[in-house]
Image 1 (cartoon, rainbow, N blue to C red):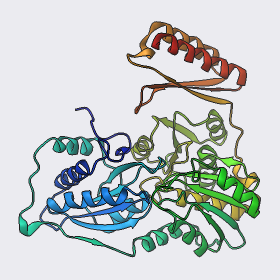
Image 2 (image 1 turned 120 degrees about the vertical axis):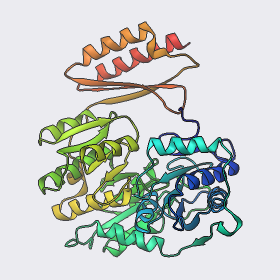
Image 3 (image 1 turned 135 degrees about the horizontal axis):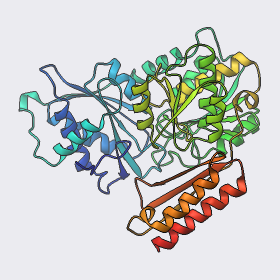
Image 4 (image 1 turned 90 degrees about the vertical axis):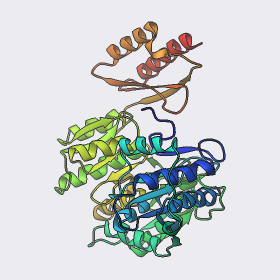
Length: 446
């Protein structure tokens, strides 16, 4: 069965345009609730959201759907995605829901679903929910309609869990830290956790108004963080995205540190301390070749997956890995969380900084990335990657890069775009290879 609603990270789109409409949100609540009605106990779903204006509308529609099929609802208000995953498990809920479009602008929104174990739903569960969306769903009897209530201690529970991931013998005393919460879901919890651990905290992106989430701030717009770190003379800067499952860091010199460098630091330290499981870490095909070489030099394997943190997590669970992530900043540390958690990953970086006593620029620069170039080619239809001229050009490029570089070419899963990425030791060669492949695609796609 093909997917109509669910993408690689739940359901997402522009609010009030299909599929992110209130009527579909209510139907999702009914379908997901029905799918997870198992046994005779009172069933419970927990719901969190980020700070988008449309969150109120989507939340109320979901509550109507869940209660209509007999599920009780616990509403958290604004809280990070990993907090919903954690609380779904710890509160023995049958289902967890996060209303967020992550790093997208405020006019988008999305629905992410978590099972009772705190993990994102399997493909099998999502397909079964999709099937129910096309059916007439049975409603609960009048006496069995669910109840809804809000809880006020969800943020406190999450802060406690985040702090518990930090080594108990360490403190952040003496560190001046800038944290950019993207005017999103972590605007209260991330600064609080850092302050309670002893840091001097300078918080930006903590005044959400419903329409300023990810707007010129957060992990996808790090200029504000860079400028604040430099102007404040801070030791380090931390940027989260709208739902706080993504992390980008800025060192004391204002230089951006991406997910590859963060994974390298955590994996190397955990391997040294005997904490790394699975013999390596899991990343996607987009992670830099420099990361792979750095890990290989330390006897640490790098396993690559398709783009998407759900594929990283699937491979981690299959292979017993406890560190994984994406170059874009999704960090999954399964000892502490069942999904990406930017704040928990940041605390691992801060622990390394405290232990070293060195500036962030020295601690966080683990390897020199090889030149990497990514270009997108838009096409109007057909399958340009199957054309013989394009395949011939790709084969020639792979032969040229053999032993010195890498080529990744893939169609976008959300738009008619071919993504062409190459990396290698010779920057001129990398640029030439990408340009030739893009030209070949453009020629047949015209």
